[in-house]
Length: 93
Image 1 (cartoon, helix red, strand yellow):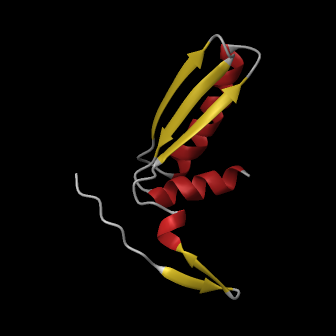
Image 2 (image 1 turned 90 degrees about the vertical axis):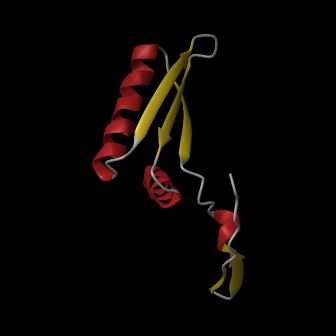
């Protein structure tokens, strides 16, 4: 696999930033650890996130694995491009 880096320097409010250093084209996976009292509670929270992601972006792939020892659901949402992941992640806050 060939990796190409494209540098884009941009100026915003008097500060300069390398956009390629902030957003990588291949950064399409959003990993979310969901801690809850039970697996059912964690999965219910994940289903809300999954529904919101799929409502906004049709091609989202999801996966979630329950970690019994930590009481955490390791959730992954895979978007078709980094911009979709970033947009979704920003709307979470």
